[in-house]
Image (cartoon, rainbow, N blue to C red):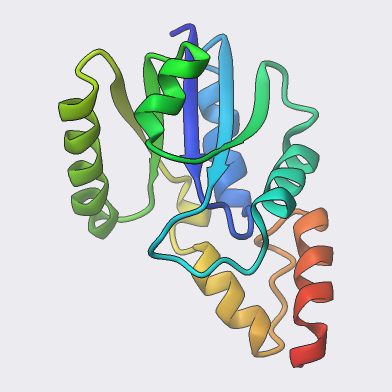
Length: 161
């Protein structure tokens, strides 16, 4: 694979996300980790903040770029010359949702493939939503997110705690 896109909300970026990005970067020459606003989610961090947090967490990974986009993922893929979309799967329950998205993307862009990487077992239960819920209640999430994200979470949630 030449260029692949690993897209998500990444609100916040977790070690599970970073694991998928690292492993995807080993099978393609160029990996673009891209964040976007999702109409079904209320993000804790702005698009610019998430882009910055991703950049900080991934800057040491060779062949990895960070971007943000709006609109359809397949249109973004075309704009950067990517023929592959990378998606991470944590559990069987993720598969049904991800499969629907992959089939829609295939309908919109038959020339762009989706590949799935199964989460490392130590991160299978980690989700950004769960991280936010635990952190909002004063729980320690430091083992699940990179330091930059932890600092941002603490700063953002401190007034609520």
